[in-house]
Amino acid sequence: MYSIIATWYLKPKQEAEGIAALKQLAQDVKQEEDTWGYLIHTGGEDSAPPSSDGTVVFIEIYKDFQAFLDHVTGPIFTAFKKDHGQLFQPIPGSDSPFFLVENIDRIGGFLRPQAGS
Image (tube, helix red, strand yellow):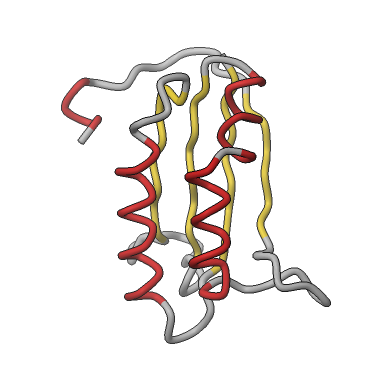
């Protein structure tokens, strides 16, 4: 199993369009059999410290590292970046969205079936 946390940042005034695109992305990624979990969150209102407006956090679980590579180089994710990448803060000097990615190793816990939808 290979898991990551990724953080992206929507541009100001792009939240509504970006969230709609992200919801569709999550639905589309369901087609990827070796993507075992794909959860997209925005900053919570009651967060302490408070989340920045436009912060988007992905929690992703893949069968293995190859499944992760297949996702990020595959048609669904590459089309999403092409079609919606402009909604996110860019890497300075680039058109590509800026994001942080951290590989994480699960040591325990669970995900109830009710949390899957």
